[in-house]
Amino acid sequence: MTLQEIIDRLNLTVLTEKKDFTAITPSGVYASDLLSCVMAGAHRRGLWITLQSHVNIVAVAALLDLSAVIITEGSTPEPDVIQKANREEVTLLLTPAPTYTVAGKLWELGLREG
Amino acid sequence: MAQLPLSEQDMLVDRGAGFITRAEELAYELKVEQVMTRDVKTVTPRTLIIDVLNLFREARISGAPVVDQDRLVGVISIEDLIRALRDSGRSELRASVSDYMTTRLVTVNVYDSIIEALKLFAKTKLGRLLVVDRAGRLAGIITKGDITRGLLNALQRDIETEELKRYRASHLFEDIISDRTSLILRYHIAPRDFINGGAASSNIKRALLRLGANPQLARRCGVAVYEAEMNLIIHATNGGDIEVEIEPHQIVIHVTDDGPGIEDIEQAMQPGFSTAPPEIRELGFGAGMGLQNIKRSVDELNIESTPARPRLIMKPKRGREEWELSREPAPGQGTRLTMKFFLQADQSLERHSSTGRESAE
Amino acid sequence: MRLADVLNIVQARFFLPDSVQSPSPSVLNRELRVGGSADLMSDVLCYDMSQGLLITGLINPQTVRTAEMVDVAAILIVRGKTPPPETIRTAWEAGIPLLGTQMTMFEACGRLYMANLPSAVRFAGAPPPDCTAH
Image 1 (cartoon, chains in turn orange, red, yellow):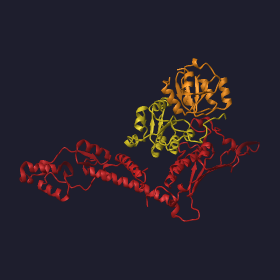
Image 2: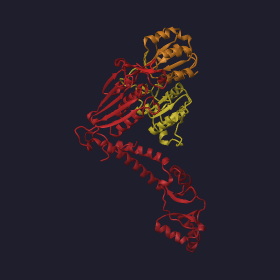
Image 3: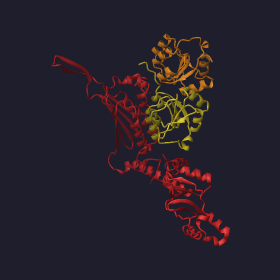
Image 4: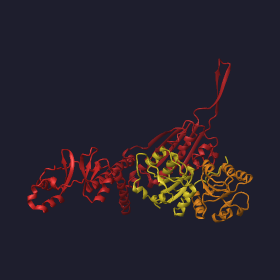
């Protein structure tokens, strides 16, 4: 499933610059709010679900070359976080839904850990 | 915690459900020796059947263990007596127990949970089980009736204990007459004590419930004081103190520390503002939501903080040729958080004006 | 959904103090109203988690304390983590069943969501979560 389909099906807001999301197919999904867990557990080119919108998430996403970060609970990042994400070419997506629901819906769509 | 009995029909149903659940738990907790009958009529292998019959009739029992010099050797029941009579009529009443007793023994240990006895009852269809001690000697017998009685007694004790505690606590404010009665709970919170972090909040929440506070109020107080307690653990240099002042119509919680203080209170009140280091974030705290959660939970919030001004301390070294300079925060500074909760008339902790839980009278 | 169903769905096991051999059957019958997952405890406090299942990767005793404050019915630890004895003891004393699964948070949430455990709802007036750049 492409990132564009995921964005459409979950009605996600794209916070960073638009890319050709139809060309991106996430390798899997990881949910955690603890950066150390994400560093250890998330797959390269995967999707990361978290309610953290701290600037550190951009660094972790860039380091792991993640397809996108889905920020939950409408936890809108500050403008400088979005700017940094654009510089690092990290895609940030936003939803008002909690992590539990986002994980549930992605699982329902057939996505797996990777 | 067991529901207290209430007059409404639906509450009684809930109470019944609570009883069943608790009884199940008790079946695992209670030991056989706590419910068994200790004073057991026994016979020997040489006792005559006629004497067993008389014993059964006088003691109104339907079976007895057979003991030979301290050793459990069998069991004789009314069914065995009937068999003896059917076999050879009245003459067999002169036979001895050893001829008719059952030697295949079904026993439970004194230290088994009563659930083990219940399983054996279901498996064997027997009416009584022999209870043996660690040395294998007869210690008593247990029937389904003993178990029912034991469970009911334990349930009763549970309820009485909890009701007594609640009764004592919830009548505090009317038993003591004064112009203004308040109950004060004090806790000291050690810095960086992540193991016990939250224990004070847990105790405060339980105390409020026992005093008759409704669950929503107890939850609001719990959430607010918990965030404040974690703040002390994370930020306060020497920890701090929590003081809960409970009055019938309001609860005031003071949280004080002599830590570094808050530089800019308005900034600290912004959602997401945090000065917590990354290792605290990895513990699940320091996301800058603490004060927000407190604000949401309380009816009134007052924060006084004096940020520590650095103090220069000079100490002479090596015969005053050199001076060692150090910066330390001046003492007597810190933060004082006052959280107030106002109780509506129908939530009052004073019994005569409260609406719920009128059971213990 | 009952706690027994959760055990099946996410192949969980109980964490019990050494002195306790098995949970009582009434705990398995405990009814769960909602589910919620987070590794940030302040965020958990923003949700109406009463009678809910808290799904988290945090294993320190604060997880239990947080759960206790909002009347959580049970805690599910994900990612195969084993909580330290003090967490297990705190949970036992608070009467909150503590479960663990090898699954990730994503898989556990996914499977429970698919099995119709609804999501917890955020309290009205709860602050927006972590939106800091500080």
